[in-house]
Structure formats: structure tokens, C-alpha cells
Amino acid sequence: MSWMAWTLPTAVFFIVIASILVGMTVWEIRSPCIDRKGFLPISTTRGDRLFIGLLSSAFFHLYIVGFTTISIWLALLLSIAWLISVMRWG
Amino acid sequence: MNKIQNNRAWFLVLPVFILVAFSAIIPLMTVVNYSVQDIFDQNNAYFVGVEWYRDVLQDPRLQDSLLRQFMYSGSVLAIEIPLGIAVALMMPTRGAMASLSLILLAIPLLIPWNVVGTIWQIFARADIGLLGYAINGMGIEYNYATNATDAWLTVVLMDVWHWTSLIALLCYSGLRAIPDAYYQAAKIDRASDWAIFKYIQLPKLKGVLIIGVLLRFMDSFMIYTEPFVLTGGGPGNSTTFLSQTLTKMAIGQFDIGPAAAFSMIYFLIVLLVSWLFFTTISQLDKNKT
Image (tube, rainbow over all chains, first blue to last red; front, top):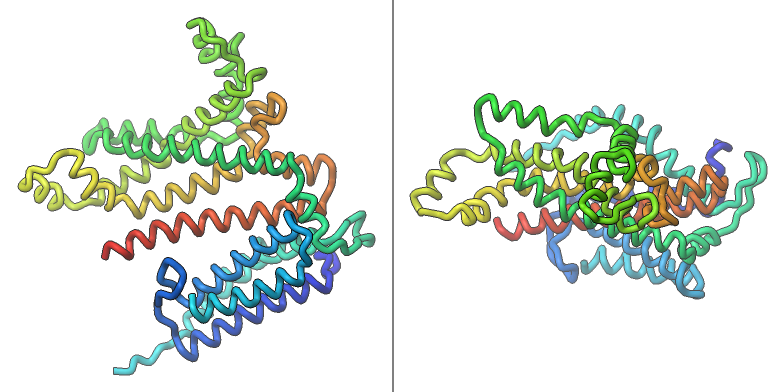
């Protein structure tokens, strides 16, 4: 595994992503979701909302890192809040 | 009635998943790991956090090549998609001529990228190339090696030459799949050619056009070989696209960390644009039904 040059933050990152995917799979098996329309302009499934939330969070992080001096931890907190609200009301 | 679902068939997907993990997921994870470290050699790597991302995002060289890349992909799509549809509409539908035009259209697709680059490099030269010589002979100053606009036009023209056939062939197969009953109904209603195109052919082509636009976008967004062979990214940096900037960084200067950060940003952009295309087109479909 040493050739992959693991670091603790990236390991945590991938573990979180993997657990989200496993969690979503279990959730889908327990209660399958249906398309619905929230505040997003398109009707989405649960997986769509997760994808939208994660991708927009990635770009938000890039913006914060590249063009501001705001701490990345704040970006992370805001992204988590954003992800939860997209999943719940999106 | 409650239907019992058996999901065991999903296990059959396992071999594919293992293959994709080996060839795509694990390498991608490695790139993510590299992007947060300063790598000297296998035993000397230092965690630098988001430093490389900040550097890369603020580097004007990369911002310029990103802009150039979007302009390039945009112009390639804007020309190839309408042109491909037009070619498909004009192709003969049956007989020997249909087969002949299919073969002729397929020829550019069979030529490898670096050969296409070489063909155009010679074809467009002002001193010995047929195209370059002819344009100069008409009194128009043209030299792709020294003039940025000429270089741009040549690179775009080369891509159009190489890939319009793909769109044309996709659309041709889409058009052949439309049942004759639609055309008969249109005839009864005395629909004009434009109306037939707008209300029958174009909606029926949507499926193949999604594939065509996605393929052409991703391919043109990652283009490397053809401009590299044709212009080498010049004159100056005028035709240096993203992948070439990335290669220079990763292999030329051996800046693995920044190159990895740049790859991640590149990947996210491709993901975003592809998703936008796909969602827009599939939503249009949903709204209609």
C-alpha cells in the first residue's frame, strides 16, 4: 500500500465517501426512493441529490481554497450543512 | 401485489467492479493522495494540505489553458453537431451509394490521432502543403506556425475533419430507425421539410445526439496528440490545451504534487460538464412525456 502514498486526511476522506455509499445502498434496499421535486430546479432521486451535493461541495472547496483566505474547515462545515439540506429539501 | 425482489444478480457485476477498481478507482485514489503531498521520492513525501490546489488555481498559465480548452471544445461542438446532422440528412438512404458514403465517412475515424496530426501538419504548411500553399496562392496570408489565429483555425478544422463523421454516422443510424409511418403521417398533414425535421427527426435523434455530444465533448476536452503534433502548442502558448499543460507539469518538470492537484480539478470539470449535458437532455425528455 505504500506506493499509494496514503495520508491520514485522504484516508479519512475515502473512508467517509465509502461509508456514505454503503449507507446509501442499505438505505435504498430498506426503503427504495422515488423521484421528487424540491428546491432544486429538477426532479431528483436520493442518489442524484447526493451527487449534486458532493460535486457542488467540491467546487465550493476549490473556490474557497483558490480565491479566498477563509479556512477550509469553515468550507467543510458549510458543505456538510449544504449536503444535508440538499438531501432533505432538494 | 407484493413482488419479491431478488437482487442476487448484482453479484454478477462484481468482476467488472474489481476490474474498474483496479484500473480506475485505485489509480484515482493515488492521484488524490499525491495531490496533498510534496513528493521527492518513494520514501520522502511531505504532507502540504491544500497548498498545490491553491497554487494551481492561482496559476495564470493554467487559467489561460482552461479558458482556451472551453473555447476549443465549444467551437468544435458548435461546428460538428450541426454539420454532422446536415451530412446525415443528405446521405442517400439505400443502394450502393449509401454503402459507399458510409465507407467514405468511416475513413477519417480509422486514422490514428498522431497520423491525423502529421497529415494536417504537412497539408497546411505554406511552403509544401496543398492547403497552405493554395490559401497563400489566393493572396491570403496564412501560416499556422507563426500566426495564432491561423493555428487555431487549423486545429479546429483538423478536429472537424476527423470527427464530424462520427456524429454523421450516429445521426444516420438514428434517422434509419424512424418508422416510415411518421413520414406518411407528416405527408398527410402536408408538413414542410423543416417541420418534419423539427417535430420528427430531431426529437428521434435526441438519444444518439446525447451520446454524440458527450463523446465529442469529453474527447475534445482531453485532446492532446493532434495539436501536439500539429503545432506543439504554439505559436507561443496559443494552442496549448489543458492536457498538454498537465503533461508538461507532470513529466517535463516532474512536479507530481501540483500535477495531481491539477488532474483532480480537470476531472471535476469533466464530471460537472458531462453531468450538466446529460441532465439537461434527459430532463427535456422527461418534461415532454
